[in-house]
Length: 280
Ligand SMILES: C[S@@+](CC[C@H](N)C(=O)[O-])C[C@H]1O[C@@H](n2cnc3c(N)ncnc32)[C@H](O)[C@@H]1O
Image (cartoon, rainbow, N blue to C red):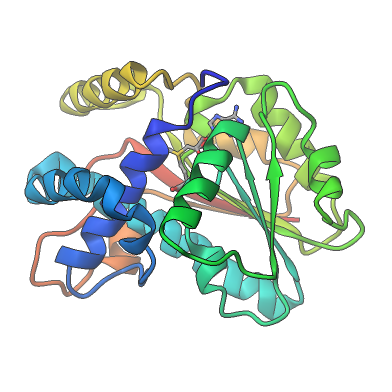
């Protein structure tokens, strides 16, 4: 990411979540703030995104994006039931969980690139969406700043367990930044955990999916946020070896969990994107 620019991919994801609220039924992710957070400023972009909603690529990508947010919130629910009281959204973008937080004792920390976080806060102000009392912001560039110090400066307790959602961020990182963040999470007390999505390397995909990947990579590259980090499931398992429990879902498992019995065709296609969660 270029330092001075807010993430354009974060806007793309938010637009798809908003299309989901307006045009998919039933919703997989119930997010009543997904549309209001875009305000009048992005109304035209939302209209255009909605027009494309039934294209195969658009539908599958939207399914993946809403499933990953829903999965993170489902995993979080389990963490809270086990006693976790801190939730960290790494690369939060325009995620609205903090504004819908149903867990009275849960403190939420939004970590994001400073430029993206500033843009989000301006958008919230413009749209008159109040900042919840149990939300703290921690501006961090994972490539150059230390997550631990910035989080602690915003009130995070490193002596208490925490659950992390790292959605739509890993493909944009260097391996070093990815490993440094994981090392921090594994340094936290038992019950801590993380969920993130990752993409399989191009060469692991069938030819038809390689072309879809190329198109997506070229789109995000044009926004100044090129993909640079991919894993096979075996490589992810290796990176997460210090966690005791691991779940890794491909499209078959994601569809079985979130998209059965629908009258529309909303579902994840292909094998490119996967969801993982890992617990200490
Ligand atoms: C595709 S968006 C996903 C946003 C959000 N998690 C969601 O699902 O809507 C990618 C996010 O990663 C953040 N990001 C990318 N590189 C980063 C870096 N080096 N440091 C901090 N955040 C970064 C961007 O600011 C952006 O919020």
